[in-house]
Length: 160
Ligand SMILES: [Cu+2]
Image (cartoon, rainbow, N blue to C red; front, side, top):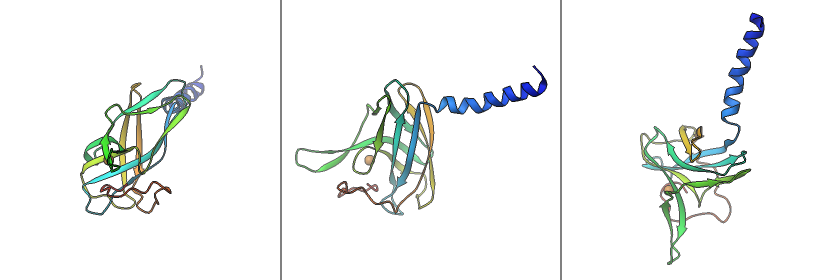
């Protein structure tokens, strides 16, 4: 191998590594919301895509932006009142499929924000999956985004 070929080979390895690490799981359209500038908590939404041939599951989220990050969803109780609950088993992402975290449904809940979140701020998240795969995600704060039709929730205090 000539020195030039060696450089090419090294460059190819460098380029290939991130592509390999990200080839099966991907996050698109991540964004964060808070209900007010003084909110102590916030919510993050995204679409998790699984391009692999094995089912996977988002089991935990870590961030420096808040004291705690939990996986939450909304459930209607017997009285019809919708409440937020923690989903300890995580969010399944089927093989060759996707799972949407969306307003009025599943979301990542940030509790105890390190500092107030305002439009344009970015929240860095580390997503850990059941398979052991880890994804680093950046979610910009987007307060102008409208909730999808029919998914407008009442009484939510964290931007849902
Ligand atoms: Cu929540």
